[in-house]
Image (cartoon, rainbow over all chains, first blue to last red; front, side, top):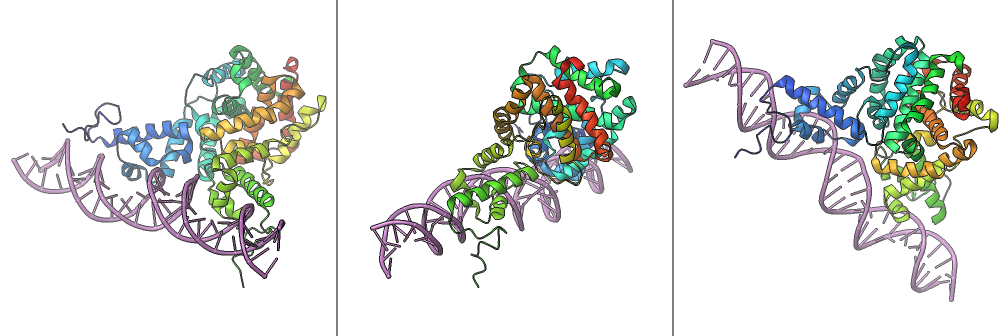
Length: 198
Length: 198
DNA sequence: CTCCCATGTCTACGGTCGTAGACTTCTGTG
DNA sequence: CACAGAAGTCTACGACCGTAGACATGGGAG
């Protein structure tokens, strides 16, 4: 009855027997989820460790500090190309529809924008995320739009919608029909992609 | 040499001799500034008390708890009509120009959007702010636009610009010419105010 | 089979947090 | 001038934070 040392129980994931790479990955996964849900300041290393099925000290052994773990988690969260959908003329509409779907009240989906919004209060976390944006999301958008200002304004609009709709849950944006909301946000993106149309 | 009990020294503001209303106001002012700069989680009641020239316990005597102090501070910050400028056809451009000015890199201006962004991580703080938006900012915008969704999208765009430009300081939005940036943001607002033009 | 080192845990420290209760000091009133 | 009550402070508690150092343990190489 060695209940406490059984790695299959606490973390929920399959048995992991002293595999450094897998443990490191489990910590990183737990960190991305926790930081996204509660922000940099709202999560303790003990919470992350518990969800990864290890003790808090192992985090510092593998990542050095909470801040460096956060930097790696941010890099993981921002690397995939989730900030734009579609290409060319289809980009504004497709990106708007994806945004509306992902910020639906019952979606409970994570993503880089939630991580961004919930960790923005801490200055060092903000600096880490600014660099991650420049390295990943901003670059994806810039090379598609060939317009840095338009790209960052598109990020700003998306972040704002995430904030109002998912983080705060303001009434009008939550209750509006998804198709109509996507249409209105899509027209915003259209103006950013093709400034002449505004 | 009663250096420690002199109220002119610690707080910086003029002598205040046992005036309950003035003390309460001083705490509230310090709370608005502190919450705006560092967010709900990033500020301790001792910090606020020190800036108001009192001790931390007085906060609980006057406001009951940190959370109730935050609720009052949010109400103060969101009450003034700072989320829109101008009226009618001038509204999009005037609001965009005001936004660009206030989010300038050297502005160091406070405002409800910074409070909103930096306190969004905490769920109870988010609930308080959602209600404050419905009560103040959202209402101002809705009665000007007679369109709840458009009003909240206008708030979303402004919050996003504040986030990228003031909180994160992303390069493109910081380095762009203010006039050109205001023009592009103004065209976004134009689409929201007059959906037919999109 | 044995030993060694990577892997992981335990205990603890100094610090900060929100806040409860007892205590002190000032000020307006009789 | 004395005094009651308002205004404000002091001390303390229990909880959590990030992290440092010593300790335990398992598993692959000889």
